[in-house]
Length: 186
Image 1 (spheres, rainbow, N blue to C red):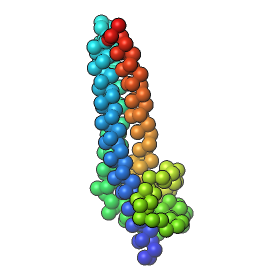
Image 2 (image 1 turned 90 degrees about the vertical axis):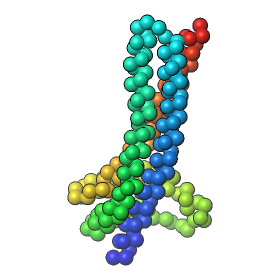
Image 3 (image 1 turned 135 degrees about the horizontal axis):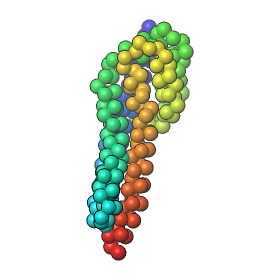
Image 4 (image 1 turned 180 degrees about the horizontal axis):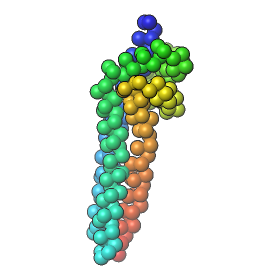
């Protein structure tokens, strides 16, 4: 059983390490979106008048809430993964103890083919393919009785999509901000 315990701890450590890195990234993205989106929103208020200004007041604020809220939601989900790290070990142990297919998926997710130098070992979790965690999430959802693991894997696997929403918001606000600035100056 020592192998199962070690594999469970390694998997939980990997997921919580990814969650910590993701929280830092999500915070940074939220601040960038707030800055660019906020400036664009204010420029729109200054450059528009009449009914267009009223429409932008509501529409722009809604867009800003969604664009800033997406990485904040990702950060909140990832913080819950870190808080429940010990419970993850138990869920993973339960999952791989009773299902050989789940054990294979866990091994494929966390296996290290070659020993790596100390510097690269810290960077390795960043390059994990989200499909590996999608497979692990599918296996954990099928189990049905696990409490923490499906939510933790959902937080990790939905993280890229939530950041994508925020980055799309940066692009949209950047373009609109430029157009609003032209309308304001002219």
